[in-house]
Image 1 (cartoon, rainbow, N blue to C red):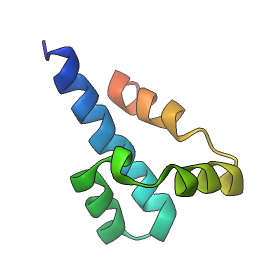
Image 2: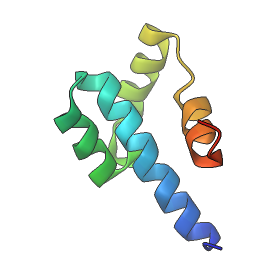
Image 3: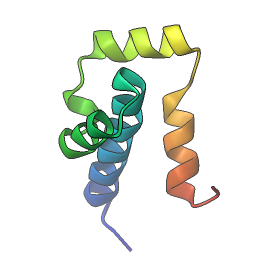
Length: 69
């Protein structure tokens, strides 16, 4: 089992990929988001994405992490 910090790092990278996909609707931006992590995406941009898309990205990250895809 992964440590708590390891799980948080994976969650951050996965969230970065999800937000990256929403930011640019392109695989390259999704990969960049996964590389840097969601924590590196400005909170202002994340709020804008959540509002504009009416999507709870954290919900999708949780679903993916749970393996119930």
